[in-house]
Image 1 (cartoon, one colour):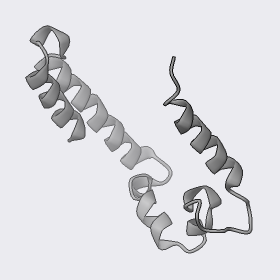
Image 2 (cartoon, rainbow, N blue to C red):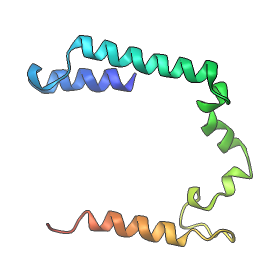
Image 3 (cartoon, helix red, strand yellow):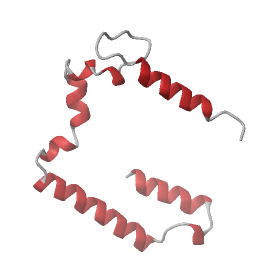
Image 4 (cartoon, helix red, strand yellow):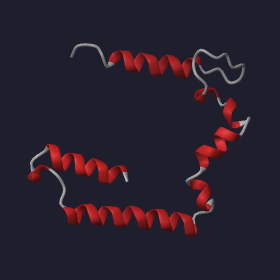
Length: 98
């Protein structure tokens, strides 16, 4: 759905030669749909591959993963400060002049 919205927006904002054609959109959408269907049928987790975020949000054990906790909350194990330090430094470097 987001892909089609993005395609529509690009079609509207850019010249036609810069965007993909309707046939390319349909073929890409078909491939994505087949990949999702194949994952549902043959994947070891089935529909759980697509609902993993809900399971994590509902599980107290998964919610204690340090990288998913905001930096203002203190977590005993494992420490997340290296992750947040690297992320903050990386974001700050985006603002440096070239």
